[in-house]
Image 1 (cartoon, helix red, strand yellow):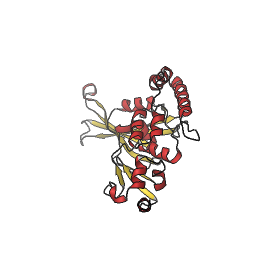
Image 2: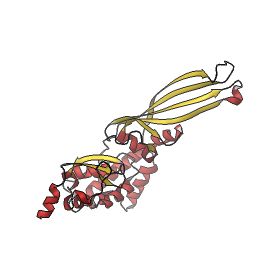
Image 3: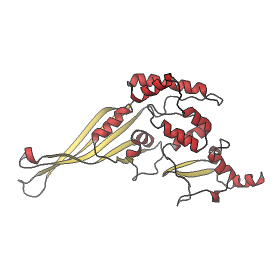
Length: 278
């Protein structure tokens, strides 16, 4: 017992984690709040020198950095809040199993009944209004099977309402023969502005975070961009998760490719589309 207490006291009260490139800061008490879980074993039964660290001294886990936020929320509250139309439920269940959070894994496990199978189908592919009702009913059924006290619930997501702005800078050239020489909408990069957690929820692995990798989930950023150059692909994804376009603006300039006014004109533009989910 004394050996375990010495190991416990060797950890700082505030602990930094690097989970798959995402940085989290939490309390030691949070990490050891579920006895016999993997995190409890690591941070209550081992010493800091036994745990892997990154180059900055943060404890490192080679796991899904985005999904770990839900693991951490569960450790804090013994509850979990998932966004509407959440498509990572199966992967989150695997993360819960990896961290040996058996109660959470059980709650995330899909029910085997026909009614729940129909509910899952509606959630994934049905009409949005029907899907919202079906998912809400499904959340209630999961609540009644939970074994913790007080009874936890899968409530409406804390990110239910929010804005995402999509921007792109494009260019096209109009030659002397417009019909044959026009080259339209060369999109260099599609930028994503908004709350970090909301952008990750919507675009997942297609979001390039290399320019702003350590942004906390509840902060805002204007430095993300997408790994593809098709606006329609971004619009489709936003529509799938319940966003609608509420505003749009665009600016453009014209310049000549050379000092000769008879040469091709190059038009450049910057356009932003604002999407909202109520």
